[in-house]
Amino acid sequence: QAMAELERALRGEPDLLQRLAEINRRRDAGVHTLGEICRRHRLSCPSREQMGSFLLGALHGDAEDYIRFHLETIGCRYCLANIADLERRQKEESTTTTARRSRYFQSSAGYLRQ
Image (cartoon, rainbow, N blue to C red; front, side, top):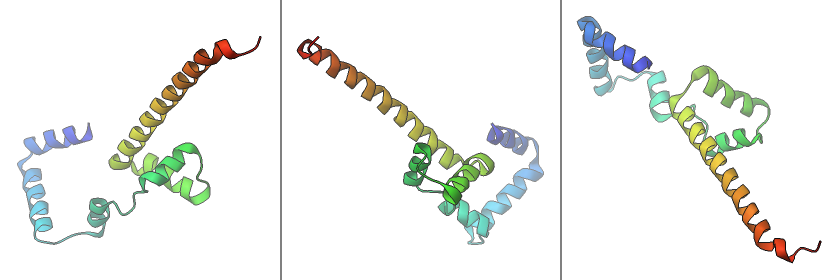
């Protein structure tokens, strides 16, 4: 949504569009900022494995605090998408496990003593 607003602003303001083109030219010429390098190479992003551990509640202390800060305060889109994917997979696996247990129980119900 913020990107759509930015795009509308750029279309309506030739000065902004010119500034953006200048920034892109500098970047293409090899003039990089530390922040840009960190964002481009995702140096501050936790690994997918670390985010999975975060979802399972297996991280504590500084590691847990940092991932929460990275997701909630920084709002890294890459990591938010990663977390959403991990949550979706976790939910699917939970549903699959429940269905599998139900089938096992139903298939062995006749063998149980009453």
